[in-house]
Image (cartoon, rainbow, N blue to C red; front, side):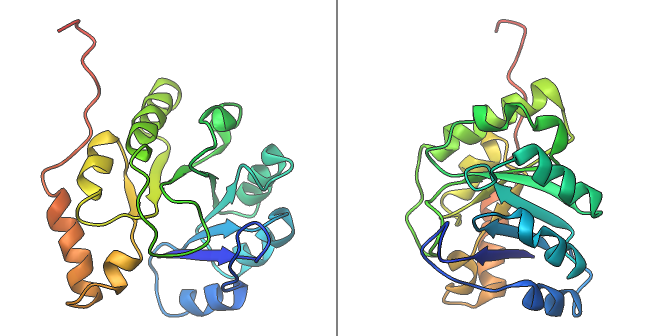
Length: 201
């Protein structure tokens, strides 16, 4: 369950806090993946860890001391993730790749649901997968958030995404949320990432 947290500063919208994450934890054993779209995320990491977050993701653009933020998250017993906005290069995570469990590629500019998918994200996902496989093969989840639906999901999975975050495509589906989830699952059925050939063929 992906929980977006926005502060009205790092992004122009305001959403939920630790109390809602705690309430979600009270009704499910599923993984709770908290995405902090906030300035100074270090101040709130402990609150979300106590609330039951399994994964806490901070933005490279918002964490003044990214190493420290990731070490704090892991020290609290949660998995640590880093999110990159569409214009932020992958080089922003190269120095912390050994400290993360998840890399989140934003395929829209964060702050509002229902935005159009940025097509260049597919190439960025492919490059992110190559970076992960070159340094920590199979150890880092590659998540994509923004404009994910039955049309965009197959290319993202083929590029190497292992986790897809879908909001509008699920909750805005005319057949209801379950139908929205099924539409995406059906679209990616049989699609998977495979490492590029190294035999020169």
